[in-house]
Amino acid sequence: MITGIVITLNESKNIKECIESLQTVCSEVIIVDSLSTDATQEIAREMGAIVVEQSYLGDGFQKNVGLPHASNDWVLSIDADERLTPEAIEQIKKLDLTHTEHDAFAFRRRNYIGSRWIKQCGWYPDYCIRLYNRQKTKFSEVKQHASVQASNPKHLNCDLIHYSFENLGQLFAKPGRNFSGRAAKIMYQKGKRATALSPFTHGLSAFFRKYILQRGFLGGVDGMTVALSSAVNSYLKYAKLLEYQRDPKVLAQEDFNKVW
Image (cartoon, rainbow, N blue to C red; front, side, top):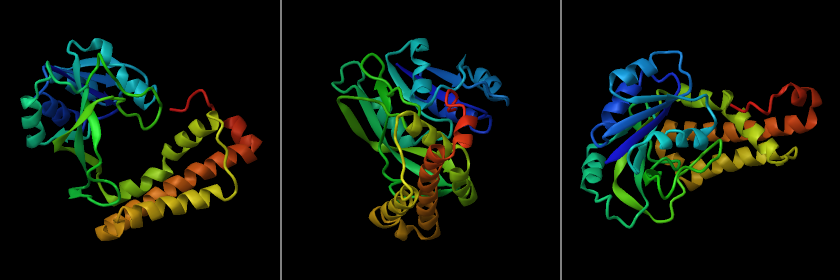
């Protein structure tokens, strides 16, 4: 028996199909909702899911909130914009979770922009652990880029679909939103510091890694845009960190107790 857990905030467009996907292999679904103002909670309850309200704590912390509410040891954690493929459903159903030596299972993740599957820039296979035994492991308790800290995971030969962005414009708008600001705040709190060259060197490094090392040049316009987006995001992150160091007025206006 498996419990599905999803963290949400205003996901009324996605939550129905997400829950339907989980219900193909899960005996219960728990939605940990960050006080949505749309119909996310209503739709989830109509679908038979358990809804737990929790203001957002950061990625790893939030994904662990649902664990005490789960009635099963095995948890399948996906995001609202992710879906199980038929192959993933078939393989999950065949697993002997009662007697397995593994504490977690990883899926290949297909990341999409619109209806386009992006296979370059490190976006595929993009293995991620999503099925795990909550008695043995859980997500790392960090505010950003959390992952399941399994000691003996197994890679499954199947994919998880991730509808990452609706279009290229949405992808390229990401760096200009609060993602880079959150990262800069977290780095500043940890005592990390930037130099005047940091934004440039990290931005260029991010572009080179995505476009050259991870063969984004094979992806045409999509590959170039993913690489540029990564570069801009990295540049802004370090530029904002440097701003905290150089400008007392900006630093004084920031609430570091409320990163999210």
